[in-house]
Amino acid sequence: MITFNSYTDFDLNQKKKHKDWLSFVIKNESFNQGDLAFVFCNDSYLLDLNLKFLNHNTLTDVITFNYNVGRQINGDICISCDRVAENASKYKTVFSEEIARVMVHGVLHLCGYKDSTEQEKIEIRAKENFYLSELFN
Image 1: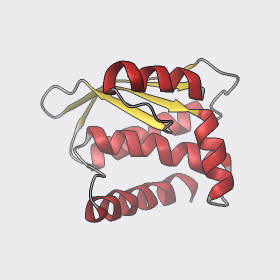
Image 2: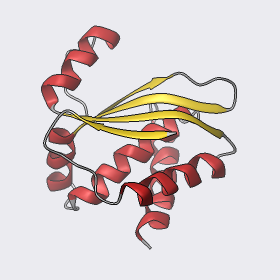
Image 3: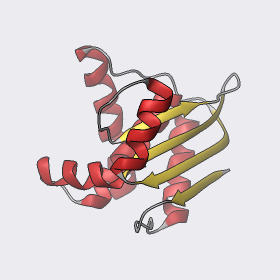
Image 4: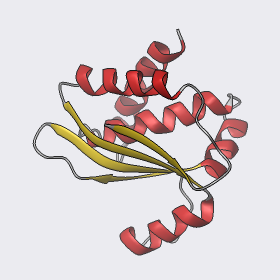
């Protein structure tokens, strides 16, 4: 089951469309869908999580907590709507596309994709772009 929780003013439009899309991503990556929670929050909330669980004192747009069991995707994906809005402005895109990018980025992490090296960043970005084209076309 995919759930959306908000600890900010943000409310995801077209929830069913996003659930179907994320289910498609998971299936297309050869995983099974388990319990996946998206938590939309602000910078302060996500910074607290970053400090508490990762010992990082930096702002970020997304933190993914992996609770996978074998090939079953389970996790919490926490997203700062403040960072998403800033990134949308910085990269000259719309908020709805940037929030979808961050959502699929978190799912791709649960599917085993990393973004520590330049090559890994290229690979995960290509996957993000592919899945965004599926959502917005």
